[in-house]
Length: 179
Image 1 (cartoon, rainbow, N blue to C red):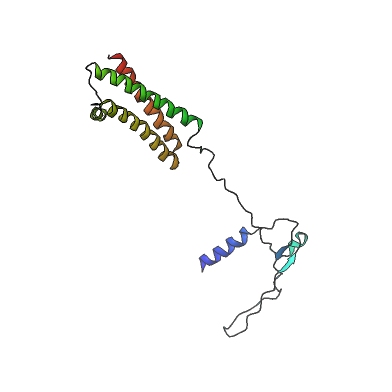
Image 2: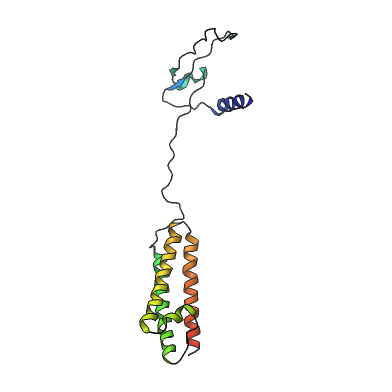
């Protein structure tokens, strides 16, 4: 009972009249005489029918607030297209460093060097296997970035590319310094 009273009071205070030029539905004033309900068998008086009032006569009762449509942007502000300029540059740099890493690694292996990466070591038995390894590495980077992009993790999408570029550049630099 207390909850119903609080909800009704909250509903009445939440209604407010707003001036507008359109006609609005306004309830008529209740009768001035008090209504007593003593028995369930007694007839209940009818409520006055709502009338249409202009904005100038809203003082006679409560007006319903107009429903306002809200538009939500289809894309968040920070979202970007997957193949935007920055991703194309990052993927090109990652691909270029993968090619450089392939060339330096292949030259070191041909001169009696040893592959230190245990994953790449599996593919280092042939030139085609080594090329496949670096192509899959670049394709995997693009795939992971796409999944991060679709799940809304745009900062992680960029960070993944930067980490891959940094590790590939480090591998190329280390391979060139240990020829």
